[in-house]
Length: 294
Image (cartoon, rainbow, N blue to C red; front, side, top):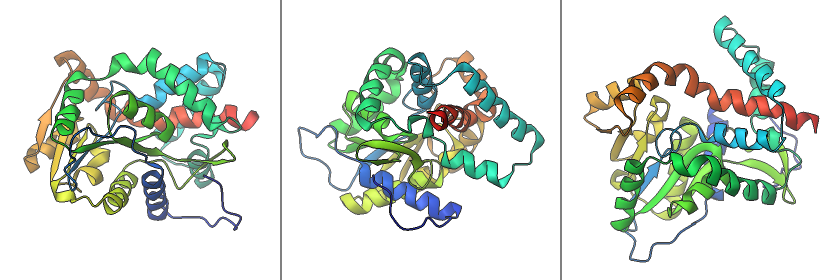
């Protein structure tokens, strides 16, 4: 997606979320078409990290790129320390926040879209394929069998999200959109990460484009951060939920599905809020250091 020639004006959070959602919906393509008639107004939306796949997809991507010398261990440890410091101190410099947001995926700056897509295929095979939750995969297939389209909605780069969707035989995916010119990444995001409210904006934009009735749609996630997305549809479902989402789901009478073992579920309940919630920001911002030095 090429940048505009007009001067960039700072956007507020709502504007960034809206832009990120609209960009994700605009970039979404049909990866796999259904062989039988589609229910034209109903669809299902699945978060990826800890919902479809065990762990954070951006972490698996970053680890795969690290092995391919995209960035060093020192880079990522330094970024992790910086993120941890601001979390502990509780005071974040506005310039730091803006830098982190704007450079969240800049580790791919200077690389081509074709290169990332090719490496993404390799990394999916080596680090992601065996981490797909069979239970969630079965739920997605059930929607497909009923003639409904199934979309992934994730903060991961849209290129990786589309690979996952294609490999699982799903309709398509929406993810974070990185700006590129003539097939080469600039290191900037279009809007913001597709996270929280931005996911809801993406779904609304896609629903308008595809003629979906959101009251007839389903959404699945593990995180309370996805309440904007879950609250948008008529059938919200908590999958492997964190403690806050589990409590909210019970209060609202939403379905809950947990495909983790008891030990994994207990450990996740303690760690998800403090660690998994920081994975995207810490890892993505950390690998950005490599992008700025290329």
